[in-house]
Image 1 (cartoon, rainbow, N blue to C red):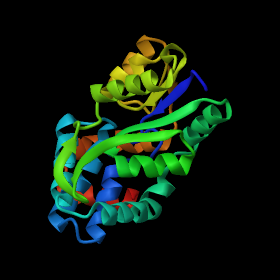
Image 2: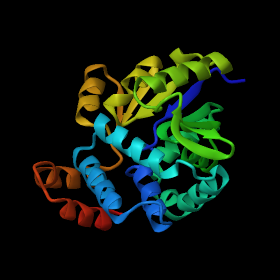
Image 3: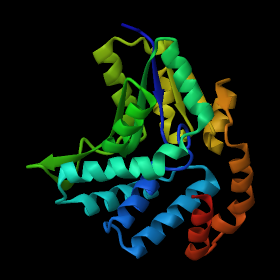
Image 4: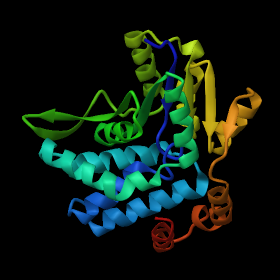
Length: 253
């Protein structure tokens, strides 16, 4: 049994962009989402691409939208749809450099976990694909084989990730002082601070500043994307139309 564990965030860390938006596109194609909802999702993705930062309100909005869409849906059927969408829209978006880092840890004999606010169905598919020890994600409550439209234990986001990582350490005997965590977002600071070897990957501005101040390792794998981000920040964040954002999403997708 290894005492060293590694904890990876998903969006903009292992994955280019956000898994939830790709899930939304796949659900739209299967009749779950209206065109209006999908347009709003395009705007959120453009905002994320432009700023490189998560927004708590956007995260809550995405969560509530997904919960409303799956309320009453059959768990098994939704799981099948998630597997199809993963193969169609997510598997090709992994960042090669970040994946290589994770595989180095596996080769070294470390346990590697995915810890993401995305639905646990997507987290488990990603973890299985990458050969990880396991994947933790947000769990939608289930009853009698269907989703209730509520969450089980809340959104796996921010401080909740640190609680989940501590739980894994308690269950598996990990030495967190010798363990690693990788993320792009200041929202994951509680998880990053919990381990002895935190790494910032494609960090947002606040996390980059914190990482530099504390001499953390910083990985920039998306330099081209960062140039695009700087170029469009003025137009998107300063008030570009939703239609413009949607066109940007189509181009990047």
